Amino acid sequence: MTVSGESTRMSGWSPPAPSNALVSGIGVVLLLWLAYAVLIQASVLLGLLPGVFVVAAYVLWRFLVAIEAIADGVHRIADSREGD
Image (cartoon, rainbow, N blue to C red; front, side, top):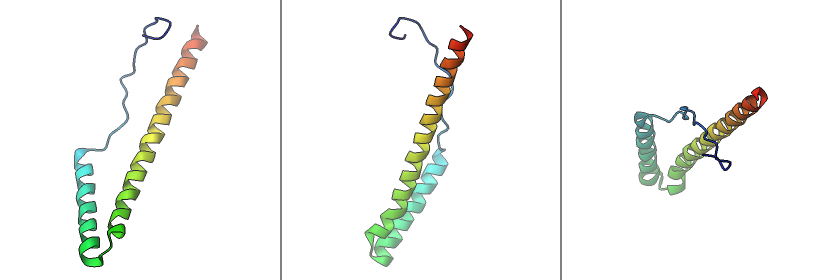
């Protein structure tokens, strides 16, 4: 329900999510990289840096998907008002 009392229907679309296999694979690679960096290179920062890049890329991707969904919703609202 909206503020004016009209009911609105939600779309069935949801943004794509990475598969569990992909997430666990990336997690294993990052964990191995961290172990290498700490045990062989003795540098924790070198081990954490790729993880920070992966998380930043994921957050940026989710932000862009959210902006796309907002733009799609605004476009649908404009189309429905145009038809009135």
